[in-house]
Image (tube, each protein chain N blue to C red):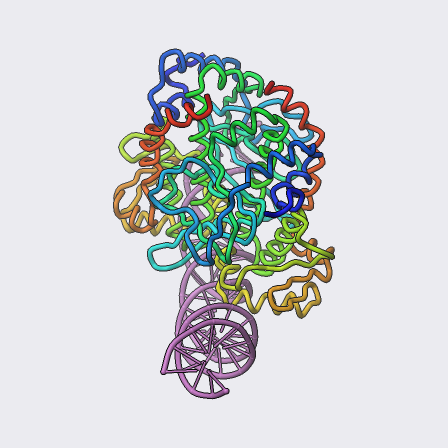
Length: 254
Length: 254
DNA sequence: CGAAAGGTTGAGTGCCATCAACGGCGGTGG
DNA sequence: CCACCGCCGTTGATGGCACTCAACCTTTCG
């Protein structure tokens, strides 16, 4: 299939800490049996019993909830290298749906195999644990977006978050990346209407902060956007700290 | 100190699954050395290295972020029986503050002891794992609140969530509980202004859905409030499912 | 070639924030 | 013991940010 080193999960974890060749191979083997999911398809079928989770290898997926009157809130957006279905994978069927936004490649990972991996490679376990911590920070920022930021701040922050996440998996170049989301999806993620998303994107474009070429987003004025959004670069700084602590954690667990 | 059976963490986990006397004792011993925290005090001091987390035994605490211009968003509210500082306890110092709302009782738990507990009582590990899953659902609902619900729906949902959480630790009677939050805190949690929180609470009162006697909240029309807020009772239904699965999970990890 | 999906634009409106007060109450120090 | 003060709740007037409604255009795809 794909080469071990280009797997997004591997790239993301390698961002957190140095990985040995053996660990990289183990991660690749974990994702050895991917399957395709067409776009706009429920990835986690409801009612099924879940004996594991999924790793998203290619594409994008959303977890969301639709209210009785049709309003939709997107809880989070899964990008390549993200786990899908953790930690609420057991009983969320009825509550939240997980759907592919575009055609996806996903690899099922049984709990048993994951735990086996953790036993053999405790440092990997620690690193994955930290990657969940980073994800929690993304949730928190998302909440601040929707709760206390204006529309333009929200969108600015959102675009910067995506840039950072694409950088972490090596899918961004020069402050530019391919955005797999429609404006309607952006609106449903940020609690805004489609029309206002459009107007606000135009405003960001008009102030020469960003450029949009179809689905391609380019951050023209990174510092300006960071200031506007009050964006904390610590997404990245965190990575360094994680590296320092990795041995402590695995030491404690041994 | 307090009796093992009245510890809120124990009560909450006992809600999830049947606990043996031995497990209850182990949980009590884990929280054996609590310390007091005065109100309005940072619970997790910044810059310290974190070798563990805390269990909140009494009181209430908030995790929040203040934006440069003073706007505040509360990320979550910790009630008795909740863990504080998970999972982002390592590097969040600069980003989010955790502060006591009232005088609190907290018990520090070193990672080493926690992992030791998990080794001896794998069923406890599974249960605590599930309790984190429930917490994730609370975050998701919180996001839906601020993203897509109107002010009155938000507050209705918020009051129902708190009722459910207080019930889970045995600190609610007959749809009534002691709310340790000011209206300003409610506003900062839900992304609303103090004045509008006040007005909306008045509206809920006017429609005979709730009653407020000082800090005491009473849900007068539970079904009406549930319908208004589109509240999913599955917070509780989840607990049952968790029970069914507990043995599978611990089986897989053994 | 028609239809559906996505993007764009403008007019009107309403929810909720902001500004500005006032009242009650507990604490606290003179 | 009382006056003062700060915290919290309450209430009303005004205004703006973002939603709703209603189009139209472009591109894609069957």
